[in-house]
Amino acid sequence: MANIQLLTVLGATGSIGESTLDVVGRHPDRYRVFALSGHSRIERLAEQCRRFSPTYAVVGDELAAQRLRALLVADGASTEVLVGEAGLVAVAQAPEVDAVMAAIVGAAGLRPTLAAARAGKRVLLANKEALVMSGALFMTAVAEGGATLLPIDSEHNAVFQALPAGYDRRPTAHGVCRVLLTASGGPFRDREPATLEGVTPEEACAHPNWSMGRKISVDSATMMNKGLEVIEAHWLFGVPADAIDVVVHRQSVIHSMVAYADGSVLAQLGNPDMRTPIAHALAYPDRIDAGVAPLDLCAIARLDFQAPDLRRFPCLALAYDALRAGAGLPAVLNAANEIAVEAFLNGRIGYLDIARIIEATMAQMADAGDASLEQIESVDAEARSRAKALVKTRETA
Ligand SMILES: NC(=O)C1=CN([C@@H]2O[C@H](COP(=O)(O)OP(=O)(O)OC[C@H]3O[C@@H](n4cnc5c(N)ncnc54)[C@H](OP(=O)(O)O)[C@@H]3O)[C@@H](O)[C@H]2O)C=CC1
Ligand SMILES: CC(=O)[C@@H](O)[C@H](O)COP(=O)(O)O
Ligand SMILES: [Mn+2]
Image 1: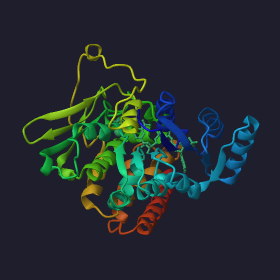
Image 2 (image 1 turned 90 degrees about the vertical axis):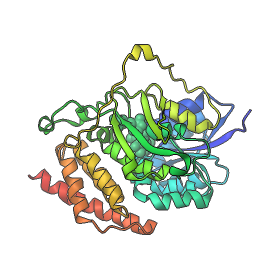
Image 3 (image 1 turned 90 degrees about the horizontal axis):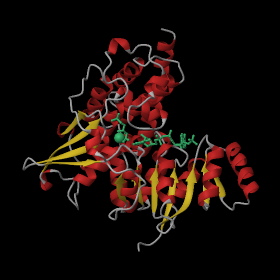
Image 4 (image 1 turned 180 degrees about the vertical axis):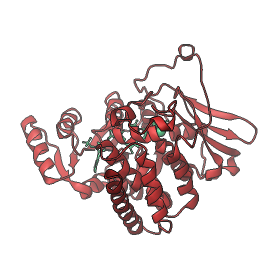
């Protein structure tokens, strides 16, 4: 029997957080929860505290902390409530913690995830934006902190499973030629761009295969999600942009592939349920029950593949551009995307404005650097402010 692992779940109230707690709840003999974090869903966080009795819960501000404390006192719970980024960093790097699930959405997760890496934790990385923003710095933190980095993103978890044991980010040394990331194509994969001007946030969030938070659902619709994943794959596996392909595979059954020098292509398959990569990373190298139904290939019957249409999905091309440009451009891309997606979800701009705003922000910040965390955060702040100004011009257009 493995030792009991003590876990911090950052972003516990979200889609990945809930799936993580579902898997953890199936294995009380393997996992205990040290800390949970939430942001707006305070009642849900209180319910999770009731179920998992963490030592700490973290929320964004003092008002939310007061609400949570009142709910916990009514339950007679002993969970202590911490506040803000300092609280997130504290529970990510606490000496007692073995593993940190990094499942906050967006740049808000950067500092706590970096703290977990620097403290040498087993980092279960869902928060792809943190890695996209700070790639070189983040991978240095993992190496210097002695952390174990395990990908949760379904494609990267699949690639990790298809790579040889002991893979050390040197593709040619291991006979790895290409990484093939599969993409569902999202809800608009069969639509002509000219028909997308007036699509609503609800339509964009209606992913054909996965149930996810709203930000990543819009990213899947624009295929910026795949663009972020190309950059994520570059940093995780040391593969250059030219050796990372995107293959549209509408069934989301093959989660990604690795092509080798001898012509072999290794794939990982499974039902589209995030509890599989979560359970894989939690238990690695063991295998545990994730509560996921077995894959029925005969019922699925066929698997389709096609090349992505970059005219239909300009965000994917912008992400390749940012990766090839290097330095701070991925952080600019990410920040502009976060602002544009939020504006779209709030009904302030149209769907097609998302790519236009990102492209214009990147053009304005072609010299952005990434030499330090402070520089990355200042690039992030400047890109947000420029993207917000562009949102204003499109709002009134
Ligand atoms: N969902 C999925 O299947 C997949 C997700 N990912 C990645 O995982 C991450 C999480 O995605 P997902 O679970 O879908 O997102 P959700 O929106 O469902 O959850 C996000 C989590 O982050 C919290 N949060 C939001 N804003 C802040 C903030 N400013 N400070 C601190 N915490 C905050 C939310 O709290 P609250 O809800 O209380 O407001 C929630 O716990 C993303 O980076 C996404 O790209 C990767 C692969 C698959
Ligand atoms: C589940 C997961 O990992 C998501 O990132 C998923 O990949 C979204 O699907 P597409 O981006 O392929 O539409
Ligand atoms: Mn993914």
